[in-house]
Length: 299
Image 1 (tube, rainbow, N blue to C red):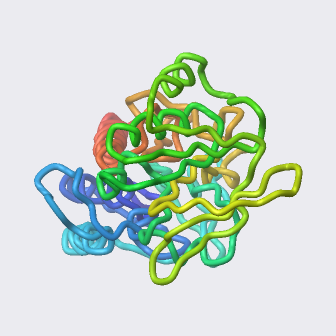
Image 2: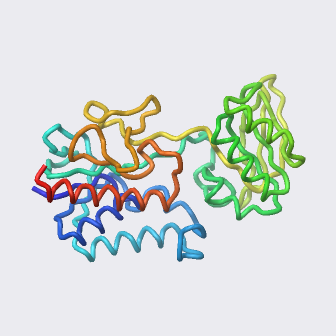
Image 3: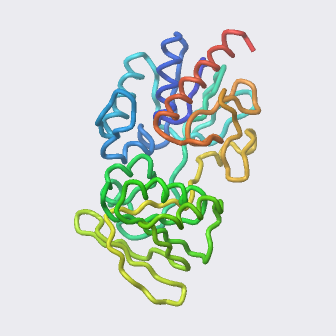
């Protein structure tokens, strides 16, 4: 029996582990893949307080080592299911806890193109606010038609020399207000009825092939491609027990509580407006603090 079991060893989960151990609770962190989550793909973090520049790998490693040094037990095993009596079933074992924190994060929905993964951090990005500053004065493209894509394009239009917005349909799904603001921008160009079909690169991205629905193709020279076609929250294994919204995110407020007492959520897999490194670590602290209160109150 552990005091707290944390599912996921990304920034949210590891921060929760640090807070749990500092409160002298026994903590088990279960991670299906490798520690660090999505942040390990970021070559340079420059928007986290007190860290002007640090690689995602180094940031995650520092968190991992801090949690381990404080006494958190970290096991690499995939969680299959959580039961309503707080039993956590993994591919290889079963564990029990007084409180559980789900911090499985979410994965970027990808275009599925050859060398897409290899170009992450080398021109391909899934977060304009994370990486936009690296493309000041350069030409970039945004793929997508929802609010996130439009907001990314607006943000980038204040940094980049040129912003192309590529959407597979003939009109955007996002808010009309954002569309109108983009229309007023001299450095923004809409590319409708089109898909990105090829990434052109040597060591870094230097262009994209765009194919129209009529079959014609053209090359656009860009240094950056921001993919905003949605995210996939890693909550499928908890759907029988935890309330999810239509997009698959765990429904939770800023207190990180779920519909099940004693089960909390932290990070990008919960309903929230801003999904950034700093909000993930914030969630980890909040979820752990509330889990500690839940245990101490004997609920």
